[in-house]
Amino acid sequence: MEINYILLAQIPLYIIGIWIFTVYMVQTLPTIQGKRILLLIAHPDDEAMFFAPTLRYLSKPSLQNQIFILCLSSGDADGLGHIRKDELKKSALQLGITHPDHVVVIEDAKFPDSMTEIWEAKTIGNILLRYFAPDASSTPTNSAPKALIDAIITFDAHGVSGHPNHISLLHGATAFIKQLMQRHTGWECPVKLYALTTTNVLRKYSSILDPAMTVITCLWKTKERGNFPTPVLAVSGFGDVRKAQKAMTTAHKSQMRWFRWGWIGVKVA
Image: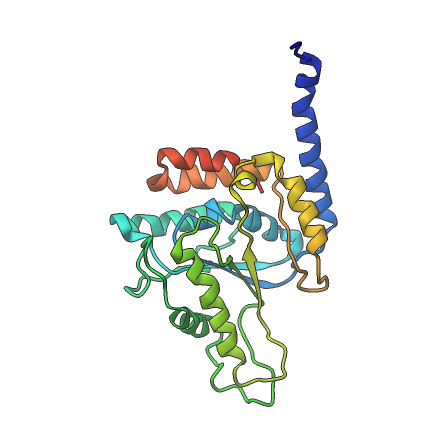
């Protein structure tokens, strides 16, 4: 069978063209602007491994968002928790967080870094109340509930990688919203909840071939616009991909095992 080398040479151009098109399309979609956003994660390095495009996109100065990170463990499974906390702050600053004080790590025996542990949703909800709605129990029932954040971004019910700690976060964030609203029936919740969508293995590792599918899916699923559009889409440009990779390789040095090199090589959107 004769090989068409001209056609083969054009494939990279087609791929780059599709990526540029998807990045352009993202700019036309509604996004979150001027809001206080909490990224809720389970371990140091989650922000770089899973949410780097989200952080890079939503932290753009033009969007005027203020972003915080709450990490519910120090990732101390291998006794490196004290190192990983510092690595998280270094990575967060590279990804767009404006001040190290906007990154908080919880160290509690109730949240072990474990592949077999499901964290209790109510306990997570109580922590979120303590940090971001401390007056929830005293707010009059005839007024809207108040919170110090406008949106939470975390993992979905599949946790992207299937990690039970990741999966626990969505249930905890949902418990927080229920606790926040339990005395305020009829009022609109002041905090919107967003979850990172888990995709199948083929899409997860298709790298720059996937953004076009992501954009099409997002356009098809768009339900809301306004101040809190649903869904929100972030696709990285070439510069952001490199910054996301560097946040993992230069900040999270303690975690750079062989399999993570392959992971960060394909994660661009």
